[in-house]
Image (tube, helix red, strand yellow):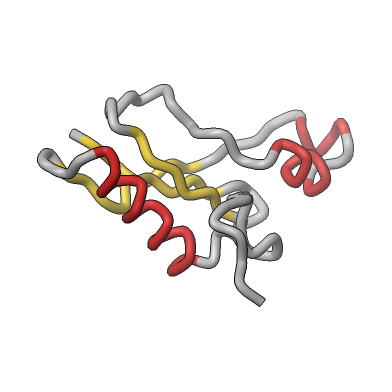
Length: 94
């Protein structure tokens, strides 16, 4: 199964990623610098719970179709807007 997931951080910001292996342990590669800036103190980092939801899945999509859908959902959820999410791509059109 190929999936696209949304991770929600405690501050409400999101990250959308894809996984073509459907691994329970994969959490993508959100912008570490942005996350660190949002949780700047030692206290804010002591206990963090994130939620991972599968928002799309397919048993038949090609890897290219999954990437295309991932980009579509990043834009739809505005996860590439730094005030909303931690995705760095696709770049926002101004």
